[in-house]
Length: 614
Image (tube, rainbow, N blue to C red):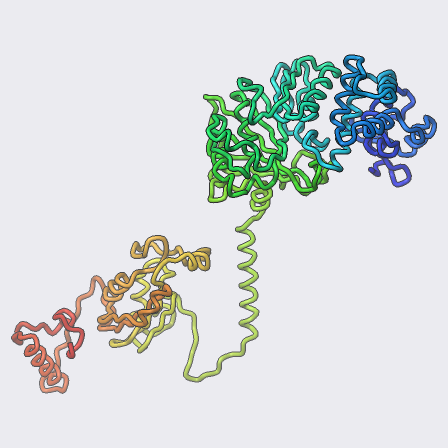
């Protein structure tokens, strides 16, 4: 009930009038045509008019429509008494009587009510009223023989306008509700097939009574005994029956219709989908109602992938819960298109998620309910075609969320830093140090430190050689660099640090492919190039954890590419001269060299030694 006219005079729809009066919507439409004093619309639109509740109640009281039991209701009660659960057979008998005048299957009371209905309204309206009542009963009890009014409305909306002269086909048409609703344009050729003979007979008679002489409905099992093997339609619509595992897989294992792959026993809906597609003309479309599970079940992955890869799947719509006749689970509308030979390959599949709408709500999606998903993004290991999976993911601005989270963390860290007390240790001082800049330019004295510790920091720099030279400049000769670094580029590190700028800062070409880590050999080469005489690996088991520890000892001041080593001559008779002479003698004896073959400006490593102990 709407409140467009204010709280004192609410507006109601035709369906609500039908519920108040205890009749069908078709009966309300008939009243509007036959009674000139029926209340005029007070709001809404031409397609969905709204009426004043007060005016409607006054009119119903005047006409006694709210008190009298209509002939339509009494006929329905008579059919239920005569045919029980076989109401399709009862509807077919009514349609046959209206078509031929032969009431052979109806008792006299029912026949009299049918005659009365035909006098007060056209035969088409009489049949439509019974169909609407059957839809309402099927909505409550569940039935494969009729599409609900809500599903029919959705298919008509997304199928769009059918051009004059087009062929429309439904291979599981039931009593023809969906087929007749879609193919109602003048000149449309309507073809259908239904496994239940009574339903097929009623669908054909209904088409005849409503003036659809171009409609032909065949009885039979569409999958096992296709009555239209050569038919290629411009539009195929279908709400497949719940066939379960017995849809005929063993008999149809090599059937030519399975061009996208043979469906498994559990995927009967995908068999119906391929049957519909086999009857689709080039350039034509298929709109098929599918359970939500067909979009993600593992057994149907291959067929879904082929639909996407070949550019056949155009659109998937998730309808609101409660649209289907017998349950509240959302169902999907898949739209397929058979490409013409000269058609350009599609680049995406449109996903529409209407699950947040009311069952009778709007079908036109708004911005956040629709997304065009590139084909390559669908062709993953699951090929999940659930619209909500893609629509909701596309609505996230991950970059903005990351930036916001980063700012929050930075603020919390600054706040935490302000809460920590100052460390008052007289022999410890702290200052910031950018290892990519010269230490002297940052107020640090070079050549003053015995130990420099670098724990997983040096890799996050642009040029590793320049970085290590700066670290080496802090050490006095013989000083030690303790280096803890990554040993490999693993997924955990990428997920943890890959969003930070430093992770991708390197430009030096010395890293392990795919990240900033250096191999042990690369570290050894860099350290020796930067003036470390010895490089010793430590904690070898740590490599299994993706870490490496190296101890590098500075052998001489930091070498420069354009500088030459100078050897300072020792003063004659000094202690330094004595020590040097002793070392040269021991080295010459050890290496079996003459004193003339030894150069005072060469390090021991050049002679194959790292120390006098060799």
